[in-house]
Amino acid sequence: MTSSTDRRAPDVYIVGLGIKGIEHITRETESACRRSQEILAVPTLPAGMTYLRNLCDRVTDLHPVSYKEDENRLNAYDTMSAMVLEAALDHPPVTFATYGHPLVYVYPTRQILDAAPYLGLNVKVLPAVSALDTMIIDLDFDPAIDGLQMYEATDLLVRQRPLQTDVPCMLWQVGAVESVLYSSAPNSPERFFRIKDYLLRYYPPEHEVAAVYSSPHPLFEASVVRFTLGDMEQHHDQLHQGLTLYIPPLTRRSVADTDLIARIESVDHLKSITHDRDAL
Ligand SMILES: C[S@@+](CC[C@H](N)C(=O)[O-])C[C@H]1O[C@@H](n2cnc3c(N)ncnc32)[C@H](O)[C@@H]1O
Image (cartoon, rainbow, N blue to C red; front, side):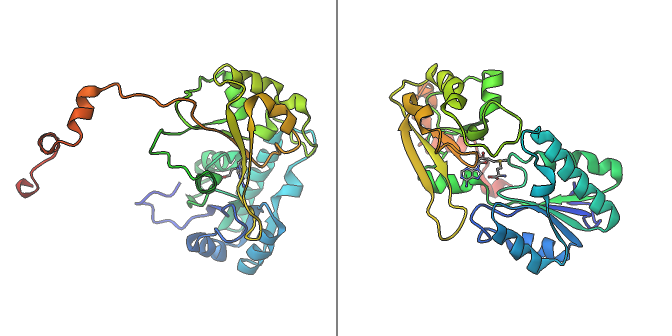
């Protein structure tokens, strides 16, 4: 990865296209795309490809060449990262562009970053708008209040990760839970039996959760479908692979450190944990 002291020009830019069509693309990302000999992309909508074609003569859509029905998604990620690395060795610089943020649940980014040093390739990753950013708006919530826990849905089940019911929870890839195989088939109620049972260990059946799908296009509104946990599988046809399940906190954690809470508004306490500005 490019460090602040690394003066070499990047061979690979890894960028995110954001969530809402092309509206979220940053100027930094746009200029990396313009500098590239090829953009290899996984956008959500065809409009993304049209836009990228205005920035670079050579744009490759990785989706149709990578994903194969009923095959392990890891194979698709191997194909994507191999194609990006091959292009970077042949005609640098190139850009790998995914939707959302390129380091939020994007395994090929990890593969490219891990392999690049062995191939002598210099990689620069740029920040972007993630579904995390858009869901914060759609749900109108601030993680400063009670924190935030987020997990990949299958990983939650496989590792039986403990949940904190006083902390808001986001479950990613819930529509693809229980399988690493790629599938465009609609979900059956059965897909959600196990995860519902797991969540019921922590939350009561009447707890209201929300399936959140942030707008992928300026003409669409975000979709926030609320239902009680006990009814989860009945919403199988709405729980598609693009959305995230939000579980609001069940309880509020009370203050445990009464000594600290008594000090947080005290000027004397603040002075005891800071330097005198003039003494510096
Ligand atoms: C492979 S990950 C890609 C995440 C993406 N890199 C990002 O930064 O948002 C796909 C998962 O991201 C979440 N996601 C993607 N787009 C979303 C959207 N428009 N609204 C809500 N969640 C979304 C869902 O949990 C989905 O299963």
